[in-house]
Length: 212
View 1 (cartoon, rainbow, N blue to C red):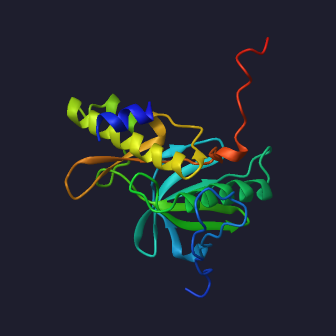
View 2 (view 1 turned 60 degrees about the vertical axis):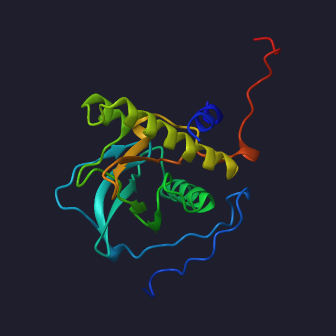
């Protein structure tokens, strides 16, 4: 489907960032930036703009820049060390994917006790977070040509992920957010790489000839 679509639409307290390794490497050892918690502030009174298995996402500021703070919540089944590993994993995947307009920009992570967070650039239409699901439900996007462009650009971003040697594993309408850019058009950004893995580590489907 991706190929068909492409053919058709031809601080001292912060650790220094180390250059990204080449694509297709396993994520172990990939270095990302660890942020100082005092430079991170959740917007006062802000509600969650997204939720998942391990926590919720909130709008906030990092040194005055608008960001999304993905907060990992400790629960009975999720220990502090487990949540640290989850945050590291997603950060490492994003580092491997490099710079692409359809991939979230990672500022870094916070790995302190009771404050495990992933910090990403804020994407939305002005001050509003807008996922594809919401855009379709409230008709924020109504023209067929706009949907064609959004779906095509989503396929371009997904193709980039695959070319970097990764599978997203959780692509759905709530995991594609729309950003209004200088051209005043909405552009898709694929988010939530918590389940993403390198192709070399992906589980293979059983053979079709295998009896059930």
